[in-house]
Every structure is written in structure tokens, then in C-alpha cells.
Image: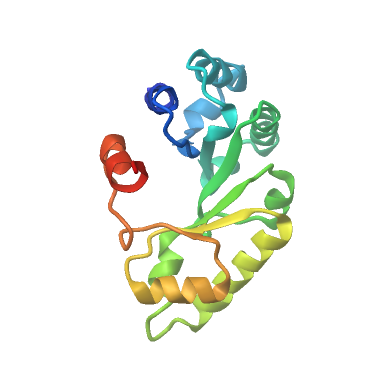
Length: 187
């Protein structure tokens, strides 16, 4: 359902000549175990005439540990089909470095729980962990997004640590697609 809605909106904006940006769609455990899932998802996107690179499929660390070999197979299949892959809530699950080596990730989304702790009294350990996550992602060629930034001080610290992208309530609460377009995209 969500993928259909995302593709319909991208097609609408494409037909109007608006600029297009990648949109993330979550994949659940249930999706990951369906046979021919990558082919099915590609067929949905293709039916709308949307460039596959505009769709980024998001998984969480906990999904990655159900059946690692199969999950990596599916993610590689999605990647070969031209989709982008991201890991959401990084740092809250198992965070296996071996798994990071095997997964075809484009983006690593650092969980908000790390961001919440970077400007407080006990920030030292969180800052060390964040610095290394950001550095590791950069060295692996993976885009790094810090989730959940709520104030300007967090933004400054994340910039200082070298984080390329930050999302959170500091910039905007979740809003409907049309409101997003009117507020941020439309000229």
C-alpha cells in the first residue's frame, strides 16, 4: 500500500515537471520472507513509470538477524534491480560489523537514542560512538543520517562530527506529501 502511494505521488510530481527526490519505504519481516519479493516490488514501481533509484527500501537491524543469508540475498537482488537500501535505527539492535560488510547499504540511519545524548552532561561516550559510526560509514562509502535531531546544538555537534545528513523535529515534524511539496519544493 505504502509503495503504491509513494509511486503514485512520484509519478504525479514527475508529470508536473517537479524535482524528484528519493523516498524511503520500510520493509517488514513479513515482506522480507515473501518469495520473489524483489521482482514484485520492481513490478509495482515500474507500473508507475518511476525510476527505481528514487525508492530506498529501509530495514531495521532486528530484521537483519532473522535469516541473514536470505536477507542479504534479497537486499542484493533489490540493489541489482536499481533500488537504494538503508538500515534504520542503527545502533539499537545487534550492529554486527560483519553484517555491515555483507549488506549492500547506501544509507545508515543512526538511531535517535544516540542523538538525544550528545549534548547532555554524560555525552562523552555517545560522542565517541557517534564519531566512529560516522567515520566508519564514510570509509565504507555509506551515507550516514542522524535521526531525531530536535535542537540547534545537536545539529552543530553532528556537523562537527562530519555527519552528512540530519533529520528530525528541528527541521520539521512529519507532514503530508502535498504540504511538504508546497513548503519545501515548490518554487
